[in-house]
Image 1: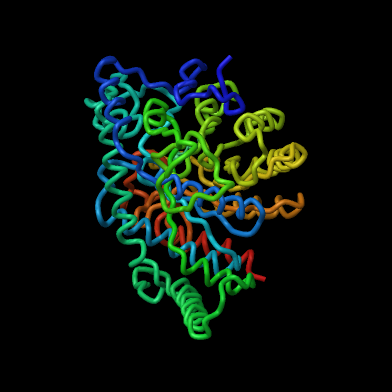
Image 2: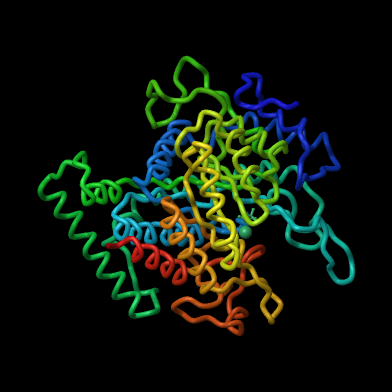
Length: 467
Ligand code: PEP
Ligand code: MN
């Protein structure tokens, strides 16, 4: 029997005693140990104070007082650690959050799939290339995309750390500059209808911010407007990735001492949790393929204090779901767990209501987030993977409606997106069709929403909540 957080003997390597899916086999064990030793010495990428602040904010999300926006690449590449891709992704997330804040009249908690989203689960460990069977691409922190670079290379783990660090550093550096909406250039919004609608929202928000500043409004008065204003003035961008490569996660897991300065800028309130923290990201999640209740990934995530996500879908049984929650959230703390649902537009009606009922009767208070991407992947006739915007919006609208009907509430969205003008998903206000996919199809993994399609999603969700 492996240990879990209720058992104080849990350690970050306890997962090694559990069955594991999606494991990576390294030929050179000495080189692996060298990389892990290096990672153990390197400083945290995020502060414990920030992680705690996110825990508090996700508590608000779970209680319906804020909305969660999580998004970014399916597979982040080391090459994306560069000025333009980082700026573009931050811009789209900030602009989407602005629209959501306005529409839902709630603060928006932003979590990027960024600065560490380098490991990918694969449906098959190998694939065919020019008649030969070669290992599948597992993400930049395991192997290279080039067919002759598919052997797992442990030095990539250290490289992943430094690419995460450089990305994080630039995110922190520009976040404030990007934040004020009046500074945003909307010219790249191609659809004039969206541009006008968006501009009018931006104008109203800028007016509201100016007005609040002029009258010196106290943000402590929790009216919807002042809450919106406070949220607009707070520039948080948290980072997240799938906790897949457990050797990496374990090496960046740090114990916060019970006395002394734990570091960070989030204060050190009496209610703060002490214990093990993943210092490589604010939030990590368990993928749909690795959420076995007695498996390694669940064991690892059960021991850390960070807020965690769990992907669930059509293969998740209601009783398994409750067992999972009992394991990773034994104290039933609101917002500790985000359930990221990904059924597909034609399956959500069949599964979500039972999952909502099971969670409610278990007493766990989770963040319900909808990932309308992973259940809606299809093969285009042109041979590439795509997703149809209509199905993405369809699953999202159904999620909102089903939660309402079950007396629950959709608390957030989880999207694969990029700020660049890629053509990977069809539909949306640009009306991309299958033939357009070839124009700028860039992804090395799943198809992402481009800038316009992402804004379309934000408008749709905002409109739903705007009374
Ligand atoms: C992903 O989020 O990229 C992913 C692989 O999702 P899932 O685990 O839901 O299939
Ligand atoms: Mn994906």
